[in-house]
Picture 1: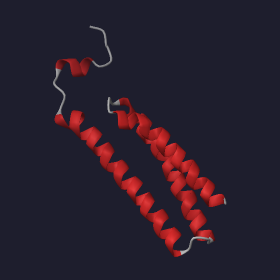
Picture 2: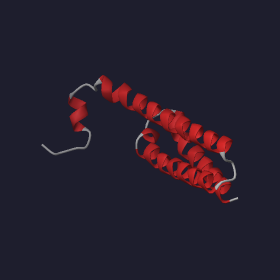
Picture 3: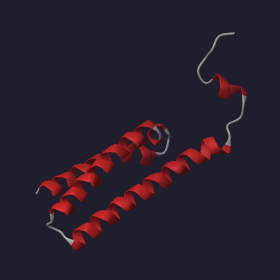
Picture 4: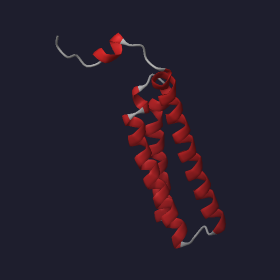
Length: 104
């Protein structure tokens, strides 16, 4: 009997954790990350919009937003959900904009 990738799933039914839990976990992780980054950027801008600390907060936020598309590309972008396929590009553009804001 030869080994074929995916053969394990052919003989068993998919669990609810695999079919529902993974996309749900991806949505929750991205929601917390994105709203958390947005809140940090808004608070930093409101408290000290032209300080060196604010520029570094922008840079760290841009780094996080640049790493998150990689996570999405490796996990969620393989699902049939359209938002997961668009998300890496949107996050990459947002990271670039925040990085430009930190320099200027």
